[in-house]
Image (tube, rainbow, N blue to C red):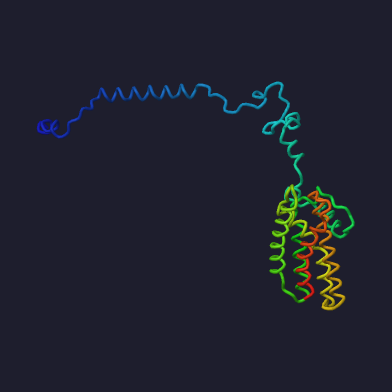
Length: 252
């Protein structure tokens, strides 16, 4: 036994004593008592009724913004939307003006409205050019390239001539618009070529009448839009040369 007591201190040495064990047990009891006090304290309510948060003068509903009619009535954006023109008019497509220009071309004796004719409206000219090419195609003539080529070159020539003759000047889009609308009688001639041949006396006379019709309508519109009174025959002559090329395509 004495031997065990002799080697016991050498076998394992530690700084932990009985006093430390008693102190740790006291600390754990104190910590548990504090947790019990904290758990017994009343916790704040996590849910508050909406009636307590809602002001007394509020009469609306939750999650729904109250509509303010005065704000929308006084908003400048509403007035700007109402004053905006239609989409087709912004794109330069006005069916009323297209119809008036078409009637002006079909009736050479009708006076032209210069304010309407002085617009760069290419909707009608493109339609009439496609219609001319389509009717020539139905007659067995593939002439789309010639139609577009002569139209572009002819518009350049007439544009240069009118700028030399008029003091105010004219835009290329206006010239192309007027010459394109006046191409409508030539579409009628090419439609007749689908059903019977124009290579004869009747076809020649019909082509001359259509050329005069197109050139007089174009010259009438140009003198009305550019205030060139007394110069209709001077403008009609180069227009007749241009429409004569289209007549050659149609007849031959």
